[in-house]
Image (cartoon, rainbow, N blue to C red; front, side, top):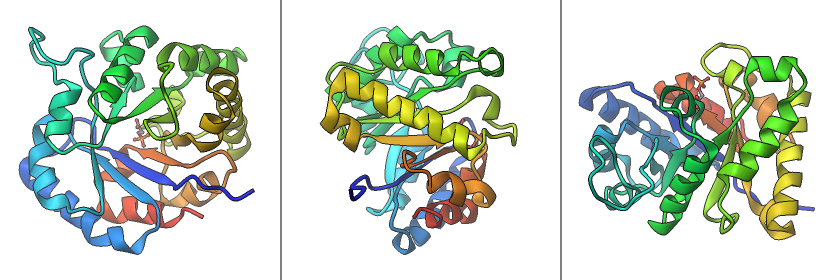
Length: 250
Ligand code: PGA
C-alpha cells in the first residue's frame, strides 16, 4: 500500500530567539524549503509569530507552541487559537511535556486545547510521551494509550490532527529510543487511533517522533513505517540542521 501521508518536519523553537535571530532563522528555512519534499512547519515563541510570518513565505507553515482553550476573555498571559490563526498560523502544538510539567497541564486540558485549535481552523499537534521511570517500569504503552485517549478530541481526523510521540527522557538529552522502540510505540499509537477513530483516520493521521532528533539519526527514524515526520527542538534552531533532517525523509 502506498503511504499517502506527506511527511511533516516541525520545528519547536521553544523559548528561544529575538526578532533579529528569528528573522534570520526563518529566512534560512524558507530559502531551503523548495529543495525538500516534506511539509515544513516552524513554531516560534508567540511574540515572534508576526515577525516570522512577515518573512516566511508560502513554502513553510507557521504554528504556535500552545493555546488557551477559550476563544477570548480574562486569561492574563494566554493566547487563543483564534489569535494564532489571525496571526497566520496553520498549526498549534498542544500538550508538550514541558507544558504538562511546567504548567501542570492534564490530558483533559490538552484535549480542550486541541478542540480550541479545531474550532479556530488550526491543526493540533498533540504531544504524548512517557518518562524514563515509566519506561523503566514497562508502562510505556499504557501511558501512551491513556494520554492518547485523554488528549485526542472525538472529532480529530487525519486533516486536523497530528500526534507527536516524544519520550520525555529523550527531549533535549541527546538520548533516543532505538528505532525498534520508536516503531513499536508508533504502531501502538496507530492501533489505538484505529479503535477510537476508525480505519481511515488511523491510516491517514501523521505520527511524528520527537526527542533529540538531529541530522545524524534522522534517516533511520524517518524511514520507520509508522513515523511520518519529526518534532524537532534543539536542531530546529539551525536552519541547515533543520533542512538536513527534512531532506532525510524517504
Ligand atoms: P529536542 O526537543 O529536539 O531538543 O529534544 C524536541 C521537543 O521537545 O519538541
